[in-house]
Amino acid sequence: EIVLTQSPGTLSLSPGERATLSCRASQSVSNNYLAWYQQKPGQAPRLLIYGASTRATGIPDRFSGSGSGTDFTLTISRLEPEDFVVYHCQQYGSSPYTFGQGTKLEIK
Amino acid sequence: QVQLQESGPGLVKPSETLSLKCTVSSGSISSYYWSWIRQPPGKGLEWIGYMYYSGTTHYNPSLRSRVTISVDASKSQFFLKLASVTAADTAVYFCARGDDFWRGWGPGTLVTVSS
Image 1 (cartoon, chains in turn yellow, purple):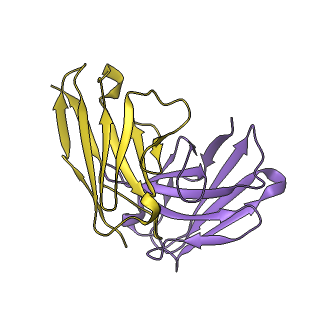
Image 2 (tube, helix red, strand yellow):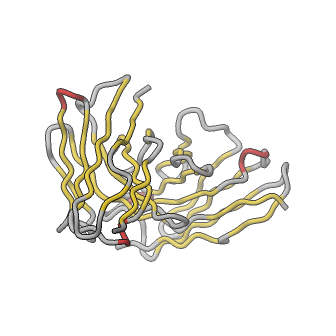
């Protein structure tokens, strides 16, 4: 089973700043099958990125994904107030599909 | 755009079977994969398993001995059964469309395991 470790656990930034969230895998993710989700309190996750770097339909271009192998990054170029929630990474390169523990983005 | 809605008991006794239903609307259940994912309160997400509308299933090995996912395509519904539950199975349960990553999710339903 691939273990995903997200860092930092909490990231404190201000609106307008750039956020860089990390997701590290315990072994290489096949075909870079890595997704990112955003989760607001009391809601289901929303798909942001799949295939490490492809934005899902309707996702603003301030969200971008990069990385390969074991190291992946979600970048939010200019933080909007609604971006201060929790982000999860998930690998689907090998079963069982697994998630990271999440990064909480909070307003500084 | 397809919509999903989970339903089922919010409270299940230890050692009993958790049973949930997901109703798919505004779209066909055919030709797609359908999944269940859960999230214990304050914790991360865990993939439970998926099935194809025709009946093929694939489960998380950590839950395989207790999980059954089934479908009733005529009613656009699919189901989750989790046997022999314990307090560790207390979670928000989500149904979602897809097999390996998930574009559409239901809002989730909290199931508490307690006597």
